[in-house]
Amino acid sequence: MEYYLQLIVNGLVVGGIYSLVALGFVVIYKATKVVNFAQGELVMAGAYVCFALTVQFNIPFLWAFLVTLAFSVLLGLGIERMVLRPLIGEEHISVIMVTVGMSSVLKSLVQLFWGTQIKVYPQVLPTEPVVVAGLPVAPVYIAAFVLSAALFAIFSLFFKYSRTGVAMRATAFDQQAAQSMGIGIKNIFAMSWCIACVVSAVGGVILGNINGINAHLGHLGLKVFPAVILGGLDSLLGAALGGLIIGVLENVCDGAARQLLGLGGVREVAAFIILVVILMIKPYGLFGTREIERV
Amino acid sequence: MTDILKIENLEVVYNDVVLVLKGLSLSCAEGEITALLGANGAGKSTTLKAVSGLLQAEDGEVTAGSVLYKGEPVQGVIPERIVRRGVFQVMEGRRIFEDLTVEENLRCGAFTRPRSEAARSMERVYEYFPRLRERRRQLAGYLSGGEQQMCAIGRAIMARPDLLLLDEPSLGLAPLLVEEIFEIIQRFNRDEGVTVLLVEQNARAALSVATSGYIMENGRVVMEGTARELLNNPDVQEFYLGMGHGGDKKSYRDVKHYRRRKRWLG
Image (cartoon, rainbow over all chains, first blue to last red; front, side):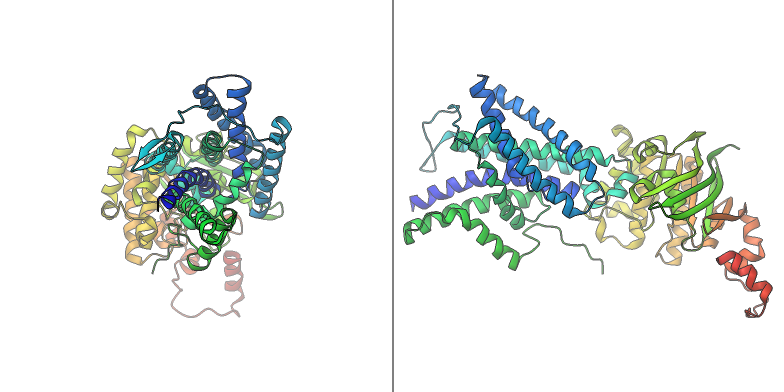
């Protein structure tokens, strides 16, 4: 039993990171209707920049973390300005292909600078486990979970109450009508890429603290698809729950397969099997917007 | 009386090939309601979009002529800056944000205004449209068509424009509701001194609130005058207000009539 509880706790932590990355994905999709295939590479970029700052430049971790966030804002602005803005008004498929291309470029850049070896973050939090509900849990796990939850709370409030947040949702629904209100949609697009880069970078740094980082970190981006499709492509709450559920399910499936059938590696496919099932029974996801139809 | 808006010999081309406006000229007197009437495809909406800058999003381009708002040209200015200068367009078909609540929709209307003003403006919208107050926490997508139109005009009130461009506010509404909406437009114009350029198919309703009007065909103005002159003009009566002369049916053999009709309806 404890074995499974441990799996669930691990799943929640990994799921929290999926949720964060999914949040970035959903924000972009909501505001610009772009399906961003480079989401995982944004995670990787953030993780490597923070790694370089702490290890190669010996900056204290907290400062390095803040600088990474600033870098992510610039990265978001840069991507929007140079890659996506020229494509405004083009076919959706062209924009999606550009994000696929961008993921390759980002991945190659990271390999160019830091190689393909696994890199380990310096120890930031104590390793002594804390006992939560009878289970030993590493402090870094708790920090990861709390940080994800806090970011979610902040962004939910932002979209509900701030003027810019509401304008972003309005732009997502009808760009031209938003323009007619005086909302600068280019600023809104830039803003959503910034948010996506920042939350992804936070996810990357957390992951780096837990597992270390390597050039395959970008594959995490793929795990976001089951999470957002389960939650509903354009729902923040959906991204949060979707990420957590996928994290827990893939850990538990993996653990069960290992223990009962002696199979390894189920973790990698579990999420995608779940994805197929969701698409069959609930294509809008748990919280996705259905078309409003007035009768 | 000064003209807040002056359009001269405007030509607009869509997609580099389709010439929609062919030298249109009109002007709006400050503080008045001006009606712009015409059949489908005459270029009424295009005219409004040329003023508000929304043409740019549709591959439309002003190729000749000028649009002067408060004496300054607006060509090539991005839409958000035009809104900040005091021009607000209520687009055809209401275009409300269906996933947002009524209140959030209204807040979007005040996007370019100082935050301190929002609460007071919102209160004013609810005075004009008490029904919106009841529904303010509902998703706007679930409102009835009339309420959606109220919400769309409410957003304009939130923006406190100097020049309001209204594109077919009567579209798809029951006659009584049309009357109500037009009364509110008139009140808004009178209370706030807002200049209104009103595009309409419903000529009778539009001319009942407007002081002057223009009739467009095929990208040009074919007639202009005060609302009274237009209402009394026999051609307008026949082709726009549906009042035949003496009730007898016109025949295509009546060539003179046919030519006259052709000039109107292209």
